[in-house]
Image (cartoon, rainbow, N blue to C red; front, top):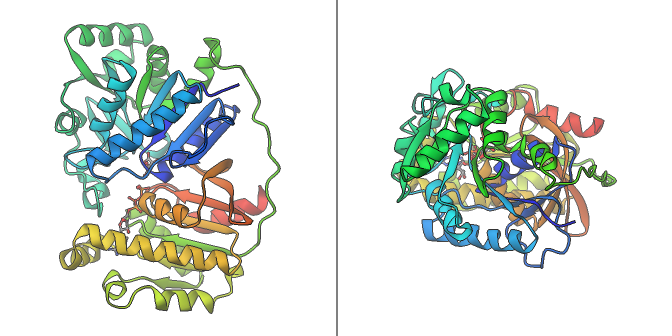
Length: 424
Ligand SMILES: Nc1ncnc2c1ncn2[C@@H]1O[C@H](COP(=O)(O)OP(=O)(O)OP(=O)(O)O)[C@@H](O)[C@H]1O
Ligand SMILES: O=C(O)[C@@H](O)C(=O)CO
């Protein structure tokens, strides 16, 4: 069978997050890195295209997502999901809103919903405001994000600066009244000309109600948790046969491993500190040194390491250090120089025999995955909510990649991920 639900993710950790939550349904999920160059003759019922467009210029983000849409439509998809970050990471211009509008126009949809809530990871939406744990988004560590600092917690305001159409809200009181009440409020908003509707959710039960109410929408947008109930609903609607995920044999992996961290999130800072405190070999990349001398010293360090000890290379730094670096280099140059260096470290580790890669950060994962020439990933066991091991071939050899969203996982994540692979 062809594809039923086609999803487009704005970064690579977001794509593996979404793929792992869809895979909980037991139905086959495929993850493509970039828009595939070949026709979709091997599409899975649930197919996810990972793009690296979170901070791209708006026109480029629109063009890439429309190309992904075209491929997914050719694959047979009749339902579509636009996946962005559960912390709504975006700039004042986009790309959440502009991509949603471009997809709506292409699909002839005059309304869509926005729900980044991911309760298992502490992201909830109440009265249109996004919370990270107990903090409003703009008071959470996301205010210091190196590329997309989030300075407002109100999703309608954030969205209004990104879209041309009218924005509105369906609040938790309506969601709690059930799918029918939500459906009819969405209809009233549509009649009033509201195209972009933020919908509150504080629990998985709320997300199930939203998915039920919107199961006939051609386009949904949100975090991975909103997509989680869709396979079962589409199955109930006769769109998706209950095919059990074909358990592909797990590839035999070289034991050598590397951990690459370019995320500067609060949780990644704690994960890096915990890994170093446990006595693992570690090398810190300094963006200012990279500008002057390139990544040569880091590559020499990798050459001298025993990769069976899973060494860590990290640019992860606290907000004050990041601010100082950005004051010298600018956020874009600082980000790119680190991404390029970590990508070079990944290929050096692969060439030295590494078959296991733990990567922290969405942009970082994009740079690393592209450098390793990965074009498709199979979804393996989930290490933490939204972070699965993924299997692929890099060149001649199979490899396992864990692409960790900045704030996901607990402090012991890096070591836990490697241990989980042993058990899987
Ligand atoms: N020391 C540093 N100074 C400035 N920028 C840095 C530094 N270290 C990393 N960066 C850049 O910060 C950005 C971090 O973004 P990335 O998407 O990788 O992590 P994240 O946003 O925490 O993860 P996610 O998007 O999955 O939540 C990257 O572009 C990275 O190159
Ligand atoms: O939704 C999330 O928080 C993640 O999947 C993500 O997109 C991080 O980049």
